[in-house]
Image (cartoon, rainbow, N blue to C red; front, side, top):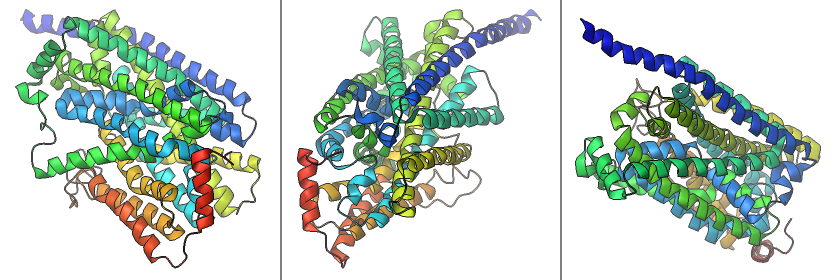
Amino acid sequence: MTAPHSSAQPALLAASTAASHRGLTISLFAAFVLVTLGITVWAGRQTRDANDFYAGGRGFTGLQNGLAISGDYMSAASFLGIAGVIALSGYDGFLYSIGFLVAWLVALLLIAEPLRNSGRYTMADVLAFRMRQRPVRTAAGISTIVVSIFYLLAQMVGAGSLVALLLGIEGDAAKRWTIVAVGALMVLYVTIGGMKGTTWVQIVKAVLLILGAALMTVMVLAKYHFNPSSLLGAAAHASGKGDAFLQPGLKYGESGTTKLDFISLGLALVLGTAGLPHILVRFYTVPTAKTARKSVLWAIGIIGVFYLMTLALGFGAAALVGPKAIKASNAAGNTAAPLLAQELGGGAGSAGGAILLAVISAVAFATILAVVAGLTLTSSASFAHDLWANVIRRGRASEREEVRSAKWAAAVIGVVAIVLSLFVDKFNAAALVALAFAVAASANLPTMLYSLYWKRFTTTGAVSSVYAGLISSVGLVFFSTLGSGKPTSLFPHSDFHWFPMENPGLVSIPIGFLAGWLGTVLSRRPADPAKYAELEVRSFTGIGAH
């Protein structure tokens, strides 16, 4: 009769230890939030005009902006989502890391410099330079807000699963309150700090995230005597899939459709970065195009190192925590990295495990808050600068009025993101981000490239490209298994899916490019060659840039 009692005792002991460590976890969390809020308030006091609020006064150096771009890019989806996908799908999960990194070459070679020279605060500034203002700004503003909300959902979902794990919360209700709290904090960051506050929070958080990931990577490799093949072997063994875990095809090689889905994902990741509004506005926070280019080079270096570390974190989680334990904590794998931290510190119930779990989770939470603030700022700036000041008020709004409307928009977008997040909390964070990339690559990238490099491109072409890319990508996501037909779908109890792939990029990106070309060819009003010549000179030389 003693066996059940003795097996129950360690469980009770672990539970009581976990409860005693929870105070430490919460206080670490609170410290991170207070420090970042302090930075935001300090920056808010230095924000005097619209230039400060939207572009941080254009006073950041290449390294500072490179760190901030990395901070924007190494989101919770990268840290939590990719580690989870690698831990559950092996080699195929690493393809996310490759796609996210390679994408920077497109941004560096085609977009960074011309964008910095041609615009002021938002992506629409570049598009509206040689087009009719109102239709183009309306389309670009709507697209920016939709992409930002998709990206926001991924961060909120990451925050929900992270805090639920940390505080030992069971059930959906508590997760939902977490999402509401993150939403409230993000609105605070943006309305108080503007771009200056958001950028400094990004810089601090990027440094913390790199240090946290580096610490875990060294600890994982130390367990296997710094021999990567031992780590991979242990991960393959623990996965229960054997060598297949280290080969291509576990997630994307099941059938012809999944192989197409992989190509679709790759296209979306590689082309999406150069169309992400919250990354594009980062190029406006530096004084010159040369600094914009430098900041992208810094970002590539920092992000490259980080994504190499996700390999160690993902396979380390598979080897040391095991896919079963990861899935039991979170079916989509979003808690693989924090669980690995706990294991490296000494396991559940140990003081070291609790401390490392608290530190890594607090860093991940700071990551979420910073990225969420950047996204909210971008979408609210687009609403205020493009839709309110230039479309609704027809250019008659004062700077103060514009900034005030941006703050109100931040609150509204926060509420929308919170409400939508409550419906998608079963999704993997990296998969949600990949959808944001697909929408950005379908709606924003074709218009940006045509506008900068095609002389004949017209307003009709621009508007057609944005709306066709936006509607096709969002529509195909809705009619895929992400919308219905699976237990993790948006509508799990219905099945109206007819699109076989999970990522729409393979279909919607060509639609965006085709619609831009067709709209231009069929439009009755030709493009203004003088305006294009002026844009060309400005985008390549910086003459006349703000």
